[in-house]
Length: 173
Image (cartoon, rainbow, N blue to C red):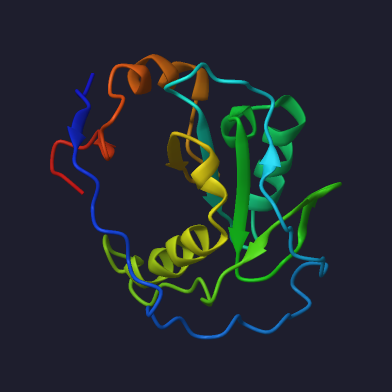
């Protein structure tokens, strides 16, 4: 098992961060109204380990279907205290669960590590702007196709109260 390394919180980007406008709607997925608050998950974590969890979802391919299946059984981000799903347009994942659009095409020009940095800057800008995470002690970003067990993360989070972030990669962030 890889040890978790508690790190101080990085500086929060300023509001002056320039983000291009949201990509216009295209008929890849049914259009829906953007959510105005985080969705409440199936879990109520103990103090010191409350979690706002989110995923970034491509509007086409297997990710929307995978998220819908996870929702139906309360798995992954849906097992957190609150959750949100981001994409490049607002569309319904399942009845009542709509993605929040980010200002990016979600197209990575080169398929190598760190080339998707711009995409995730746009996602984090949206997360910070919405500020839904502020009601929770931890913010967790996970991919739709990642195996994530929120209940297994709780003891780790309780052991690292006050840390800015946890790094579970031996090579750093």
